[in-house]
Image (cartoon, rainbow, N blue to C red):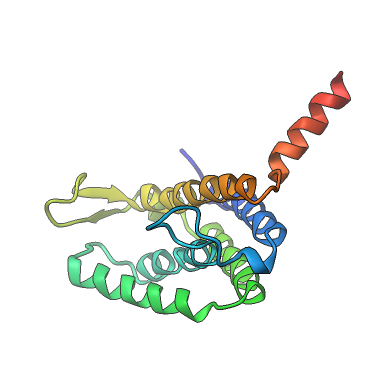
Length: 174
């Protein structure tokens, strides 16, 4: 079974890499939109910074069932929190602070809490998830957006840091 410590360490790695991307993209490119209907760089990073907050609230309060009114209320709060982050400095600070808050939250979970289940109304499938599944989804969600941001970096002429690191390691072995 995955432990709270494992979740914490893995989330810290993911967030560290997201922060590097946020720092490497120039502030004047935070308004860049890769395609119609897609969030700007700044909007995407603000979304990533804010999205773990509802999971902290949900699991801290021991919620055992999520319904549509609860989800809609959290979505509205998240959108307001995202819109409050207007500058690169605010977004990077929110990524760093929120990342530490979420990692510490993960470290404080118990194995028993991770096994607890939460139910969802139809048509959501599966209708029951463990807290572990829900908490893993935070990392998966962030990695999804980070992949988008790495493509945006390429569009802006920036080689992503993980690519640079891999290329340097290959060159060092040659």
